[in-house]
Amino acid sequence: MSSSATVQADDSKPILGFWIYIMTDCVLFASLFATYAVLYKSTAGGPSGYQLFALKNVLAETLILLTSSFTCGLAMLAAHRDDRKQTLFWFAVTFALGVAFLTIELTEFRHFVVTGNSWRRSGFLSAFFTLVGTHGLHITIGLMWMVILMWQVFKCGLARVTIRRLTFLSMFWHFLDIIWIFIFTIVYLRGAIAP
Amino acid sequence: MSEHEKIVVAQHDTARGSLASYVAGYIFAVYLTVTAYLVVYNHLFSNTTLTVVIVGLALVQFMVHMLFFLHLGRETKPRWKLAVALFMIMVVVVLVGGSLWIMSNLTYRMTPTQQNNYMNNQQGI
Image (cartoon, rainbow over the protein chains, first blue to last red):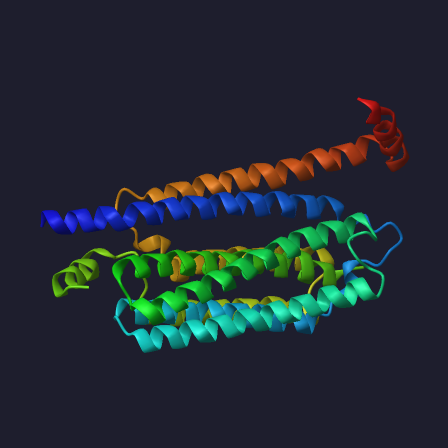
Protein backbone atom coordinates (compact mmCIF):
# COMPACT_ATOMS: atom_id res chain seq x y z
CA MET A 1 0.00 0.00 0.00
CA SER A 2 2.78 2.40 0.89
CA SER A 3 4.36 1.97 -2.55
CA SER A 4 1.06 2.72 -4.30
CA ALA A 5 0.67 5.90 -2.26
CA THR A 6 4.12 7.01 -3.44
CA VAL A 7 3.19 6.32 -7.05
CA GLN A 8 0.10 8.47 -6.73
CA ALA A 9 2.08 11.32 -5.19
CA ASP A 10 4.70 11.01 -7.93
CA ASP A 11 2.17 11.39 -10.71
CA SER A 12 -0.31 13.87 -9.32
CA LYS A 13 2.22 16.54 -8.29
CA PRO A 14 3.82 17.07 -11.72
CA ILE A 15 0.36 16.98 -13.29
CA LEU A 16 -0.83 19.69 -10.90
CA GLY A 17 2.28 21.69 -11.74
CA PHE A 18 1.58 21.45 -15.45
CA TRP A 19 -2.06 22.35 -14.77
CA ILE A 20 -0.91 25.54 -13.03
CA TYR A 21 1.24 26.39 -16.07
CA ILE A 22 -1.80 25.92 -18.33
CA MET A 23 -3.93 28.18 -16.14
CA THR A 24 -1.28 30.94 -16.29
CA ASP A 25 -1.22 30.52 -20.07
CA CYS A 26 -4.99 31.17 -19.97
CA VAL A 27 -4.21 34.48 -18.30
CA LEU A 28 -1.78 35.33 -21.12
CA PHE A 29 -4.53 34.65 -23.66
CA ALA A 30 -7.03 36.63 -21.56
CA SER A 31 -4.84 39.73 -21.84
CA LEU A 32 -4.65 39.26 -25.63
CA PHE A 33 -8.44 38.82 -25.76
CA ALA A 34 -8.88 42.02 -23.74
CA THR A 35 -6.57 43.87 -26.16
CA TYR A 36 -8.55 42.52 -29.09
CA ALA A 37 -11.89 43.48 -27.52
CA VAL A 38 -10.63 47.03 -26.97
CA LEU A 39 -9.16 47.39 -30.48
CA TYR A 40 -11.56 45.48 -32.77
CA LYS A 41 -13.38 48.63 -33.84
CA SER A 42 -10.13 50.54 -34.53
CA THR A 43 -9.85 49.68 -38.21
CA ALA A 44 -8.25 53.04 -39.23
CA GLY A 45 -10.27 53.07 -42.45
CA GLY A 46 -9.16 49.53 -43.29
CA PRO A 47 -11.36 46.43 -43.53
CA SER A 48 -13.24 45.05 -40.52
CA GLY A 49 -13.55 41.39 -39.60
CA TYR A 50 -16.97 41.39 -41.25
CA GLN A 51 -15.32 42.02 -44.63
CA LEU A 52 -12.26 39.83 -44.08
CA PHE A 53 -13.30 36.57 -42.44
CA ALA A 54 -14.34 33.51 -44.47
CA LEU A 55 -16.58 31.81 -41.95
CA LYS A 56 -16.71 28.41 -43.69
CA ASN A 57 -12.92 27.99 -43.50
CA VAL A 58 -13.02 28.91 -39.85
CA LEU A 59 -15.75 26.34 -39.14
CA ALA A 60 -13.57 23.74 -40.87
CA GLU A 61 -10.59 24.78 -38.71
CA THR A 62 -12.72 24.51 -35.57
CA LEU A 63 -14.05 21.05 -36.41
CA ILE A 64 -10.55 19.84 -37.36
CA LEU A 65 -9.08 21.02 -34.06
CA LEU A 66 -12.01 19.54 -32.14
CA THR A 67 -11.52 16.18 -33.84
CA SER A 68 -7.78 16.32 -33.11
CA SER A 69 -8.61 16.86 -29.43
CA PHE A 70 -10.79 13.75 -29.55
CA THR A 71 -8.15 11.61 -31.31
CA CYS A 72 -5.60 12.86 -28.76
CA GLY A 73 -7.91 11.47 -26.07
CA LEU A 74 -8.09 8.14 -27.91
CA ALA A 75 -4.27 8.09 -28.08
CA MET A 76 -4.08 8.57 -24.30
CA LEU A 77 -6.54 5.72 -23.72
CA ALA A 78 -4.36 3.49 -25.94
CA ALA A 79 -1.25 4.61 -24.02
CA HIS A 80 -2.86 3.62 -20.72
CA ARG A 81 -3.74 0.22 -22.23
CA ASP A 82 -0.02 -0.12 -23.04
CA ASP A 83 -0.91 -0.45 -26.73
CA ARG A 84 2.04 1.10 -28.56
CA LYS A 85 0.70 0.70 -32.11
CA GLN A 86 -2.67 2.33 -31.35
CA THR A 87 -0.98 5.14 -29.41
CA LEU A 88 1.28 5.95 -32.34
CA PHE A 89 -1.59 5.68 -34.81
CA TRP A 90 -3.89 8.08 -32.92
CA PHE A 91 -1.08 10.55 -32.25
CA ALA A 92 -0.23 10.44 -35.97
CA VAL A 93 -3.89 11.26 -36.77
CA THR A 94 -3.80 14.09 -34.20
CA PHE A 95 -0.60 15.40 -35.75
CA ALA A 96 -2.06 15.32 -39.27
CA LEU A 97 -5.17 17.19 -38.12
CA GLY A 98 -2.98 19.75 -36.34
CA VAL A 99 -0.99 20.30 -39.54
CA ALA A 100 -4.24 20.68 -41.52
CA PHE A 101 -5.46 23.29 -39.03
CA LEU A 102 -2.19 25.21 -39.21
CA THR A 103 -2.22 25.09 -43.02
CA ILE A 104 -5.70 26.67 -43.22
CA GLU A 105 -4.69 29.31 -40.65
CA LEU A 106 -1.45 30.24 -42.45
CA THR A 107 -3.26 30.34 -45.81
CA GLU A 108 -5.70 32.83 -44.26
CA PHE A 109 -2.82 34.91 -42.82
CA ARG A 110 -1.00 34.85 -46.15
CA HIS A 111 -4.15 35.95 -47.98
CA PHE A 112 -4.58 38.91 -45.59
CA VAL A 113 -0.95 40.00 -45.92
CA VAL A 114 -0.89 39.67 -49.72
CA THR A 115 -4.05 41.77 -50.06
CA GLY A 116 -2.45 44.55 -48.01
CA ASN A 117 -4.14 43.76 -44.71
CA SER A 118 -1.18 42.74 -42.57
CA TRP A 119 -0.72 43.59 -38.87
CA ARG A 120 0.59 47.00 -39.95
CA ARG A 121 -2.76 48.03 -41.46
CA SER A 122 -4.74 48.88 -38.28
CA GLY A 123 -5.07 48.39 -34.54
CA PHE A 124 -7.72 45.78 -35.20
CA LEU A 125 -5.40 43.73 -37.44
CA SER A 126 -2.47 44.06 -35.01
CA ALA A 127 -4.65 42.67 -32.23
CA PHE A 128 -6.03 39.97 -34.54
CA PHE A 129 -2.62 38.73 -35.69
CA THR A 130 -1.22 38.82 -32.14
CA LEU A 131 -4.10 36.84 -30.66
CA VAL A 132 -4.59 34.25 -33.41
CA GLY A 133 -0.84 34.11 -34.13
CA THR A 134 -0.02 33.34 -30.48
CA HIS A 135 -2.48 30.46 -30.60
CA GLY A 136 -0.94 29.26 -33.86
CA LEU A 137 2.51 29.42 -32.29
CA HIS A 138 1.30 27.26 -29.40
CA ILE A 139 -0.10 24.75 -31.93
CA THR A 140 3.27 24.70 -33.74
CA ILE A 141 5.13 24.01 -30.49
CA GLY A 142 2.57 21.32 -29.62
CA LEU A 143 3.15 19.63 -32.99
CA MET A 144 6.94 19.65 -32.52
CA TRP A 145 6.48 18.23 -29.04
CA MET A 146 4.20 15.53 -30.47
CA VAL A 147 6.86 14.44 -32.98
CA ILE A 148 9.48 14.15 -30.22
CA LEU A 149 7.19 12.09 -27.98
CA MET A 150 6.07 9.84 -30.84
CA TRP A 151 9.75 9.15 -31.51
CA GLN A 152 10.20 8.30 -27.83
CA VAL A 153 7.22 5.94 -27.84
CA PHE A 154 8.49 4.36 -31.06
CA LYS A 155 12.02 3.87 -29.70
CA CYS A 156 11.49 3.14 -26.01
CA GLY A 157 7.85 2.06 -25.66
CA LEU A 158 5.37 3.23 -23.08
CA ALA A 159 7.37 3.57 -19.89
CA ARG A 160 5.66 5.35 -17.02
CA VAL A 161 7.70 8.49 -17.51
CA THR A 162 6.72 8.56 -21.19
CA ILE A 163 3.04 8.19 -20.31
CA ARG A 164 3.40 11.13 -17.94
CA ARG A 165 4.91 13.24 -20.73
CA LEU A 166 2.11 12.19 -23.07
CA THR A 167 -0.38 13.26 -20.38
CA PHE A 168 1.18 16.74 -20.29
CA LEU A 169 1.02 16.97 -24.07
CA SER A 170 -2.63 15.89 -24.16
CA MET A 171 -3.53 18.47 -21.47
CA PHE A 172 -1.74 21.13 -23.53
CA TRP A 173 -3.58 20.06 -26.67
CA HIS A 174 -7.04 20.08 -25.03
CA PHE A 175 -6.23 23.51 -23.56
CA LEU A 176 -5.41 24.90 -27.02
CA ASP A 177 -8.75 23.62 -28.25
CA ILE A 178 -10.49 25.54 -25.44
CA ILE A 179 -8.66 28.74 -26.37
CA TRP A 180 -9.66 28.21 -30.00
CA ILE A 181 -13.35 27.96 -29.02
CA PHE A 182 -13.11 31.49 -27.65
CA ILE A 183 -11.19 32.76 -30.71
CA PHE A 184 -13.86 31.16 -32.93
CA THR A 185 -16.65 32.83 -30.95
CA ILE A 186 -15.22 36.23 -30.06
CA VAL A 187 -13.08 36.95 -33.11
CA TYR A 188 -14.77 35.15 -36.00
CA LEU A 189 -18.45 34.66 -35.11
CA ARG A 190 -18.74 38.03 -33.35
CA GLY A 191 -16.97 39.61 -36.31
CA ALA A 192 -19.42 38.04 -38.75
CA ILE A 193 -22.52 39.37 -36.96
CA ALA A 194 -22.25 43.04 -37.90
CA PRO A 195 -19.91 45.28 -39.91
CA MET B 1 6.76 -1.52 -16.77
CA SER B 2 6.30 -4.36 -14.25
CA GLU B 3 2.92 -5.97 -13.69
CA HIS B 4 2.74 -4.56 -10.17
CA GLU B 5 3.37 -1.01 -11.31
CA LYS B 6 0.72 -1.30 -13.99
CA ILE B 7 -1.94 -2.30 -11.47
CA VAL B 8 -0.94 0.52 -9.16
CA VAL B 9 -1.15 3.08 -11.95
CA ALA B 10 -4.53 1.72 -13.02
CA GLN B 11 -5.85 2.03 -9.47
CA HIS B 12 -4.70 5.52 -8.80
CA ASP B 13 -4.89 7.48 -11.98
CA THR B 14 -8.56 8.33 -11.54
CA ALA B 15 -8.23 11.70 -13.21
CA ARG B 16 -8.10 10.26 -16.71
CA GLY B 17 -10.84 9.63 -19.19
CA SER B 18 -12.80 6.70 -20.47
CA LEU B 19 -13.84 6.14 -24.05
CA ALA B 20 -17.42 7.05 -23.12
CA SER B 21 -16.40 10.43 -21.71
CA TYR B 22 -14.34 11.33 -24.79
CA VAL B 23 -17.13 10.31 -27.18
CA ALA B 24 -19.77 12.20 -25.19
CA GLY B 25 -17.53 15.28 -24.96
CA TYR B 26 -16.82 15.17 -28.69
CA ILE B 27 -20.52 14.90 -29.62
CA PHE B 28 -21.48 17.76 -27.25
CA ALA B 29 -18.64 19.94 -28.52
CA VAL B 30 -19.43 19.43 -32.22
CA TYR B 31 -23.11 20.05 -31.53
CA LEU B 32 -22.38 23.33 -29.70
CA THR B 33 -19.91 24.54 -32.34
CA VAL B 34 -22.26 23.84 -35.24
CA THR B 35 -25.19 25.44 -33.38
CA ALA B 36 -23.20 28.62 -32.76
CA TYR B 37 -22.14 28.69 -36.40
CA LEU B 38 -25.67 28.17 -37.78
CA VAL B 39 -27.20 30.74 -35.43
CA VAL B 40 -24.78 33.37 -36.74
CA TYR B 41 -24.84 32.15 -40.37
CA ASN B 42 -28.65 32.42 -40.58
CA HIS B 43 -28.70 35.55 -38.41
CA LEU B 44 -31.53 34.14 -36.29
CA PHE B 45 -31.68 36.96 -33.71
CA SER B 46 -30.89 40.67 -33.41
CA ASN B 47 -27.20 41.59 -33.18
CA THR B 48 -27.09 41.98 -29.39
CA THR B 49 -29.01 38.77 -28.72
CA LEU B 50 -26.75 36.91 -31.15
CA THR B 51 -23.65 38.06 -29.26
CA VAL B 52 -25.13 36.92 -25.95
CA VAL B 53 -26.18 33.56 -27.42
CA ILE B 54 -22.79 32.72 -28.96
CA VAL B 55 -20.85 33.78 -25.84
CA GLY B 56 -23.25 31.64 -23.78
CA LEU B 57 -22.67 28.65 -26.09
CA ALA B 58 -18.88 29.19 -25.85
CA LEU B 59 -19.07 29.15 -22.04
CA VAL B 60 -21.09 25.92 -22.09
CA GLN B 61 -18.53 24.40 -24.46
CA PHE B 62 -15.74 25.55 -22.11
CA MET B 63 -17.43 23.55 -19.34
CA VAL B 64 -17.83 20.51 -21.63
CA HIS B 65 -14.11 20.56 -22.51
CA MET B 66 -13.06 21.03 -18.89
CA LEU B 67 -15.23 18.12 -17.70
CA PHE B 68 -15.00 15.60 -20.57
CA PHE B 69 -11.52 16.25 -22.01
CA LEU B 70 -9.58 17.62 -19.04
CA HIS B 71 -11.56 15.55 -16.48
CA LEU B 72 -11.84 18.33 -13.93
CA GLY B 73 -14.82 16.64 -12.25
CA ARG B 74 -13.00 13.34 -11.60
CA GLU B 75 -10.48 14.78 -9.20
CA THR B 76 -10.33 13.38 -5.68
CA LYS B 77 -10.14 15.66 -2.64
CA PRO B 78 -8.35 17.98 -2.06
CA ARG B 79 -9.39 19.51 -5.39
CA TRP B 80 -6.30 21.57 -6.15
CA LYS B 81 -6.88 21.63 -9.89
CA LEU B 82 -10.38 22.99 -9.39
CA ALA B 83 -9.08 25.63 -6.97
CA VAL B 84 -6.41 26.77 -9.46
CA ALA B 85 -9.00 26.79 -12.28
CA LEU B 86 -11.40 28.96 -10.26
CA PHE B 87 -8.58 31.36 -9.43
CA MET B 88 -7.70 31.53 -13.15
CA ILE B 89 -11.34 32.34 -13.99
CA MET B 90 -11.35 35.12 -11.38
CA VAL B 91 -8.14 36.66 -12.79
CA VAL B 92 -9.51 36.42 -16.34
CA VAL B 93 -12.79 38.11 -15.37
CA VAL B 94 -10.96 40.95 -13.59
CA LEU B 95 -8.48 41.34 -16.45
CA VAL B 96 -10.93 41.31 -19.37
CA GLY B 97 -13.84 43.00 -17.57
CA GLY B 98 -11.57 45.63 -16.03
CA SER B 99 -9.88 46.46 -19.35
CA LEU B 100 -13.20 46.85 -21.15
CA TRP B 101 -14.63 48.94 -18.30
CA ILE B 102 -11.66 51.31 -18.18
CA MET B 103 -11.48 51.72 -21.94
CA SER B 104 -15.21 52.34 -22.37
CA ASN B 105 -15.02 54.91 -19.57
CA LEU B 106 -12.17 56.58 -21.42
CA THR B 107 -14.14 56.71 -24.68
CA TYR B 108 -17.14 58.07 -22.77
CA ARG B 109 -15.16 60.91 -21.16
CA MET B 110 -12.76 61.87 -23.97
CA THR B 111 -13.20 62.17 -27.72
CA PRO B 112 -10.72 60.19 -29.85
CA THR B 113 -9.01 63.50 -30.78
CA GLN B 114 -8.58 64.39 -27.11
CA GLN B 115 -7.17 60.92 -26.45
CA ASN B 116 -4.66 61.28 -29.29
CA ASN B 117 -3.61 64.76 -28.17
CA TYR B 118 -3.19 63.55 -24.60
CA MET B 119 -1.07 60.59 -25.69
CA ASN B 120 1.06 62.83 -27.92
CA ASN B 121 1.61 65.30 -25.07
CA GLN B 122 2.60 62.52 -22.65
CA GLN B 123 5.08 60.85 -25.00
CA GLY B 124 8.09 62.62 -23.54
CA ILE B 125 7.70 61.17 -20.06
